[in-house]
Amino acid sequence: KAGVTQTPRYLIKTRGQQVTLSCSPISGHRSVSWYQQTPGQGLQFLFEYFSETQRNKGNFPGRFSGRQFSNSRSEMNVSTLELGDSALYLCASSFRQAADTQYFGPGTRLTVL
Amino acid sequence: EDQVTQSPEALRLQEGESSSLNCSYTVSGLRGLFWYRQDPGKGPEFLFTLYSAGEEKEKERLKATLTKKESFLHITAPKPEDSATYLCAVVSGGYNKLIFGAGTRLAVHP
Image (cartoon, rainbow over all chains, first blue to last red; front, side, top):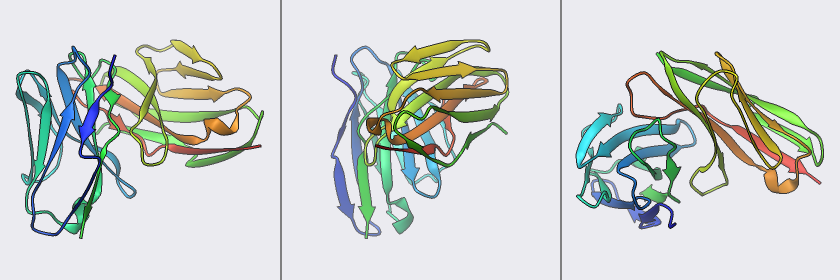
């Protein structure tokens, strides 16, 4: 069974730009969560989607948004990029809810210059 | 507020020297505790899920245990390839999200 895939793997953007990251969950998984990982803050929850609806949201500004499609694939968007948005963005999928085991993708490394 | 604390922050072992990593948690109603392994620049790799106090899971040289306040990841006779950051996370109450600890960086030297 194929794992969680994320594209692109690496991105370099400049301040003020916007970026869209994509995630394809494991086949049959309907819950997709996004996390930001930085050396200073560790892994922090961004949001979770289930059946195309945002079910839970972390403490991030409105510049961070996401969506989920009918095939469970998900995208997250960051607008008006700031230097502090440089991080590894991780997507995780689970069967139905977060208490089910979440499986992570390889991540997208975003660098903001 | 839900909180997960891992100790030690870093651990250096000689090959074959067994040890334990600790994950203590304060949550409002534990729904699950998860252990992951993460290599540099990669996504976390799932190791174990524990749901109730007294539960134990084993996989090769690793064994995870759970009490009402903490979890341990025991590493028996580690090898250099076990070097990685080990992350503990919990899901609590009605929240559909993982709350992670800061991790333990393990280095196993031959």
